[in-house]
Amino acid sequence: MENRWYDGLNLKKICGKYRVSIWQCPQFLFLVMGIIIIVAVLVAYVAASAYDQPELAALSVLILASVLFIIGHMIISAFEKVALSSLSKSEFISIMSHQLRSPLSAVKWQLNVMLSDDLRQEEKFSDHSRAYLEAIYGQNERMIRAVNDLLDVNRIEDRDLVLRPTLFSLFALTERIKKSYEKFSSANNVEIIAFSQDNLPMIFADEERIKRVIEHLIDNAVRYSTKKSEVKISMKYYGDQIDWKITDQGTGIPDADKPRIFDKFFRSVNASRYQTEGSGVGLFIAKSIIKMHGGAIGFSSELEKGSTFWFSLPIKK
Amino acid sequence: MKKILFIEDEESLQRAMGSMLEQKKLEILKALNGEEGLVVAKKETPDLILLDLILPKKNGFEVLGELKKDPATKDIPIIVLTNLEGSSDIERALALGATTYLVKANYALEDIMMKIESVLEHK
Image 1 (cartoon, rainbow over the protein chains, first blue to last red):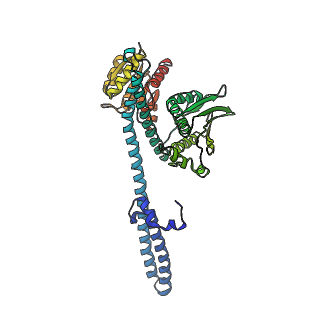
Image 2: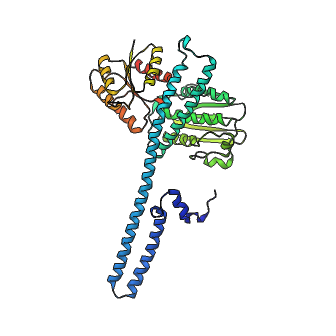
Image 3: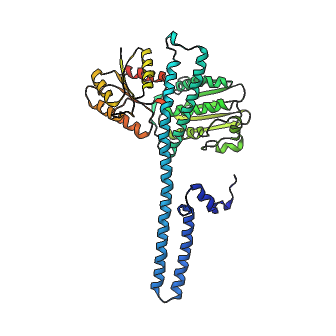
């Protein structure tokens, strides 16, 4: 929706957004305070010039100052209310996500056992049954990722995302994630190929978080490949940094959407046209995590030709 | 055969972990609450402990603290396996002496087996 210059004056709309009453709405209170200040100055001026009694002028200024003090206090408590409601909301998200994770991890582990290659022959399921179990596993993983996204966004906003760096191989991690996406990518007619420069050094970063970044980027690349095609991942290093890059031959991103692609909840026009799934937080999370590592993230894209997303990380921070 | 103690109140998780450890030729000891976990740990001195944080009777942090205080159990590596992921929880568990901190929902049992094997190797 287009923003008009006078939208800033539409207090009903602004205060409606905060879901607070008019006397708890900072914008409205601030306006009232402004008017009172102007009145106060005028009254003091008139009082001082019209009467020969400076006490009266002083008194009227004092009364108005007290009113200003009360309104100031109302503004502060209104802000406090907004801040507290956001705090309790983020606590609620955190508690609910952990509640959701318990049954999700229980389902995951039961299926791990049922689908294990090491199961005794007589305990193994037929290929037919396995296909069903694998489908359930895939859907369960999707729910786990959605909960993780919810927690990550919450933590990024609360500035509570703490990195736990360890030394690991970015190539090995990519290979593992690629393997877990095999079913999803072949269902989408996409082949993922990953290659790396020889002797890629180990990297000191938060493996779990970088895993989420790579998952989001692979997920997007596969999802927006509309025809039978390849998704290429490559890794190389120079100096003290590693570059990780993924290229697809998908729908591409329209120029108009490019500046907002890393914004929270933003979904490109193409995203909603080709994909109904997705919450629009993946790239927002990816960017926040890479930035926290002191790295950089970016992309280039051409409509109907495909997109390339890349990130670079310092080998040691 | 190496012994792994799993302190976890959810029976279905105990069963799944037990069957996976069995496949890897590891022995599993089960405890369904914090107090029981401490008793079994002291009696059996397992090679490794898998510890949940939200537990009936004593919680995981208390169990972790007591295990690390007792000379008989302080050298047993402990992998925290939980669905809590607040930075303060992680810091607290690591400060108390946990070897690794894993979020259950993010690790398939096969991956946990790999972590267990690598911790046992470096013991």
